[in-house]
Image 1 (cartoon, rainbow, N blue to C red):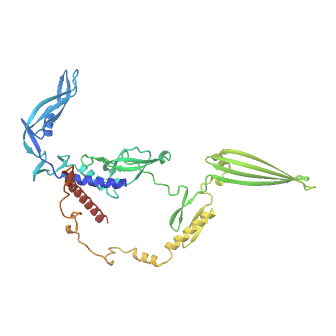
Image 2 (image 1 turned 30 degrees about the vertical axis):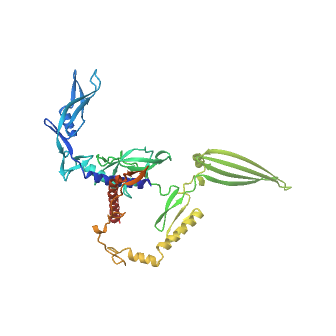
Image 3 (image 1 turned 90 degrees about the vertical axis):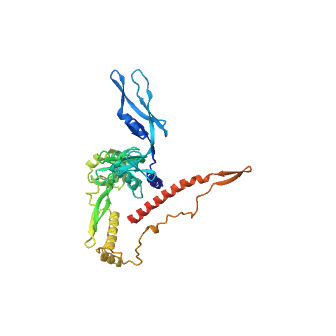
Length: 467
């Protein structure tokens, strides 16, 4: 839902800004000797003429010029300076510039009672500035990538611990992949898996002044979003191929239980001794614990009487040490050299060695793949007949119709019907009639109507041209 709100806000602000940018009101112009222009232009000329002031002793301080008390008859030009040594900060009146009438700001011309920027200039915050291709491209990028499916409404997973507000350079606005626009990362979640496996989740957004300030940047290893490495295909095993399809088979677990038994028998003529040794090893993490149980049975050869004794001992060692002494134990196998293997094709059959349950699963997968891809069915025959055809294949579909979209088909009429806006509401209060001026909302509703029409037009373009 946050993405939807962001989309609506971006499009409405963009639409309103376009509507507002179309009108630049004329401003009062002033003149002081050879200085002529708006109040801000007079200030700029004064700054260029005297940027600093001498404090004596070879010390100079910067002058910061500004206008004060502008009226239709004149404007005062003041300046402030940093404190000179031994003095405090200073603000002083310098001169007055008289009004010479109204006119358009620099780099603009009067057009129908308002001002429009000259060719090669763009309106920014009421002034006409030289057109900046980089700025315009990033401004368009900010709007286009906030539409559904755009880069600024997607969730991202970045490698490592990425701080909230981190800035990167995102490509897509320029023809060159080495150039992009500045974006900020809004951090949502940090998943700490340890080391390089840590992941930060969040979204990207552009600065609020992306339509007025050049946001272009150079894409590079130090300012590109750190992408999360692709996951291993078979993190718990290794790959195999069945009928040309790559599938995974799990490794033999690196922890669990393993064991074995040895039994010996000796006879000294009087007594027969049978000794059985049972060993059981359990590995957890990097440690292995081996339990050894020895059972000794003695039988008198003359009387047949028997006695049995049992002893148990336990030893713990590191897993590498255990595997070095017991290389054939299944606890030390990685699944690649324990005899596990499978493969085959629909024509040659299927073979599998190793765990019986996993072999049964792989064989069932093999059988289904063969039935799906090799057995002839009406559906597979239709697919084989159509897959190689080229060109336009939908022209003869029943119900096809070509519609010419013109302005007459776009309904921009008032959804509430014809008529004027709502009128003020008269209310009787203590015998007197008071008018509630609710009609003042009408100009704002008109502006909202333009914004909604612009939003509808954008969505129409998106639907038609994206298919």
